[in-house]
Length: 160
Image (cartoon, rainbow, N blue to C red; front, side, top):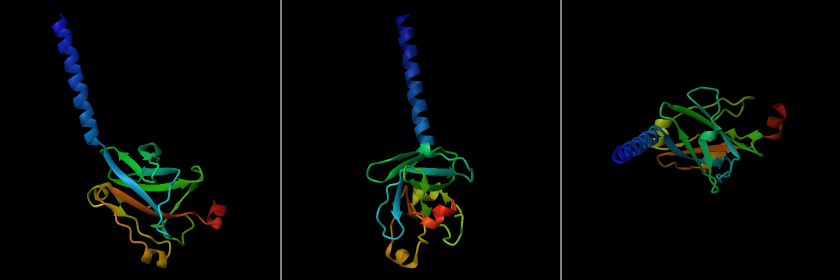
């Protein structure tokens, strides 16, 4: 009887360990760095708004922000595209992503392939000024997503 109980508990433990390893294989993890579009200095957002596969739902809980200004994003297996925005002032304001057209009243989200981020790394375009784009040439490692942003102007905040 004791032997059967031990065998049953051992079997359950092995199944739990196997299922845990399968779960780890189905998630994709990447690093996020946020840079100021004019200076190229690292920016520390207070939060992130993550959208996937053109779905309007926000998945802020997928991001863990580190003290050094980087963040770790974990997305489920079935996701292929993502769009990210950083927030500041205790998450009440959203950074303007420099990959959007600056003349638009409402910025348009750009979507990035997760497969490209994981294999080569991605740096978002810097449309926050010609001089800034010429000076700022960040490089992303495989598994790294570098977002170039700026704070909204007073006029942009007032329009909201």
